[in-house]
Each structure stands twice: as structure tokens, then as C-alpha cells.
Length: 336
Ligand code: MRU
Image (cartoon, rainbow, N blue to C red; front, side, top):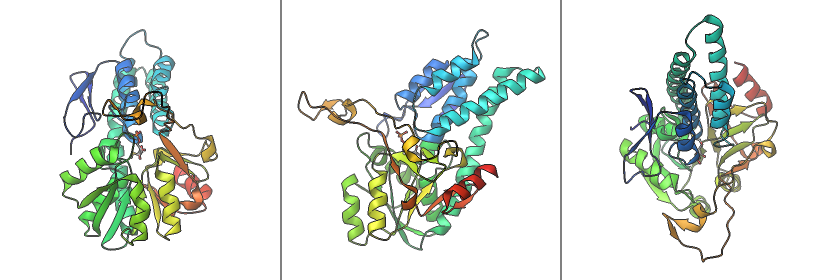
């Protein structure tokens, strides 16, 4: 699998996911501002990968002798508001910087080492939560997933896609249904690319197909990722996730969320307090740079929605399979 980030010769190379699957092209980032731009414009996306990119961005920014830690962190934090992994990684960076300064070590080297450590940790977390999640699926499962949560989105093994990979490896997956994920098609472009690479059987469906598939009995479970899980278990994830959870409840199917502990946010009480990113209307009104809506049409482009905890069957994390009441299980996972 092609990793979303590579550190080489003093620069962060970002796989430009906007061009996939047609083109494999790398952006060379030598400054925090360039990393911030790569995150903002979705060259790198997916909550954990955004966090890893930010950790590298902080390390690059703090190489400048006159750089101010808070200013660099603020620049990176301002790029995307919903994925809490971004804030989490920057907080880890702040702590590492201060500890290095107290010990008389070079702060920028410490930040680079932290970024690399976070990459290794992400791979371990992904593998663990994927194994735990795959064990919860029925045999010969037909699993519907949304957006992209594979290695491109995490820098590791994947979360929801990781569950599919582990289930496939264990002979438990009959087929994945991949929703295309309008407006930017992370499912059709990125998840399909990753699953094809892994030889995992899948079919891409339009987002609107989920209800018909479930009504036909063609889905056994839904597994999605998360950008942030609030203290009460409400889940922010790619727009279109909430309707999948409603449909799953209607059809008495399990609705699972796969996310590392770094995506749990006990500091946010409930989903209505999660900031939801609103992106440019052009992403909805155009397809690949070509206008599809008539001139003068407006659009509302919320990038994420919130699924209430009551619709979530379980959250697969590396700290265990979290079940309701989430207030208690999330506190245990974060504390542990
Ligand atoms: O806008 P994106 O592509 O960054 O949105 C990605 C998602 O919503 C993912 O489901 C989420 O970040 C989890 S990635 C493991």
C-alpha cells in the first residue's frame, strides 16, 4: 500500500490524494505553511493522517530558529476543525517540545522523532482495533462502509477499512459495499483503490443505494470511521454517515464505528458541540472542475454529520470494543 506521508531529505512528502487513483504524485513540504495548505486542500485527509501530517508540520516549522511554537501550532490547527486527531497530535507536540527544552535537547529533532513515533503507534493501534472489530462481524459478512478509512486516511493499516482487511484475511468477509461518498468521492476513488490493491471483493454504490441494499437483505453490518467521538458516544464522521446509521437501525443491522483512542474526545460532551467543517460550495456544484448545477445555484456543503450514540452498536478501538454506556467505556479507554 502506498503511504500517505513520507519523510525524506528534510522534507515531508505528501501523496496528493486529490489526484488518486489517476495519478500518484507527491507534494514536497518544507515548511509548516506548506503542510497546512496540504491539509486544508485535502491533499492529505482522514483524521489520523491529518494528525500525523500536523505532527510533521510542527517539526518542520520549529526548525526555524525564530519560530514560535504556539503560532506554528495555531496555523496547523486552523486547517480543519472537525478531526480531533489534529488537536491531539499538536498537544503531544507541545508537551514533547517543552520536555525537550527542560532537558536541554534539540526541540525540532524531538518533534520529528515524535512524528515518527506517532506513525508507528498508529499502525499498532489500527492493527489491534481491526482485529477486534473483525471478530465482531458475522461469518461471510457483507459490510457497507463509507468514505475512506484505509492506510491513506491513517498512515497505518486503516480503521474501518482495516476491519475489512482483517476480516478478509481471516476468511470472514464475503464482500464490501463501498459508498462513493459525494461530493469528493473518497469511497469511489480511494477506498476502491485500496481494496482493489488488497484483492478484497467489493462493489462501489452510490450513497443513495444504502437503503435499497439493506431492504434487499444484501448488507450484514455497517462499519465506518470517525473524525471525533464525543464523551457521550456521539460520532462525527463524513457527511452521509448519519443516514446509514438510521437505515441500519431500521433494518436491525449492527452499525459499528472503528477509530483509534486519539479520535475519542472526552473534552467534548456531546455531538452538538463538535465543530462541523463547512467547505466551499463549488465542491457540490462542480464535478472535477466542471459546473453541473446552473449558474446562480447555491449549495450547502457540510463535510461531516453527527450520528447519535444511541444508533452506534459499538466503537472498535485499540483499547477494546467500547459498548454503551459510552460515557463509561470511553472514559475507561482514554484513561487506560
Ligand atoms: O474529509 P475527509 O476525507 O478527511 O473525511 C474523512 C472521514 O470522514 C473519515 O471517515 C475519518 O476521517 C476517519 S479516517 C480513518
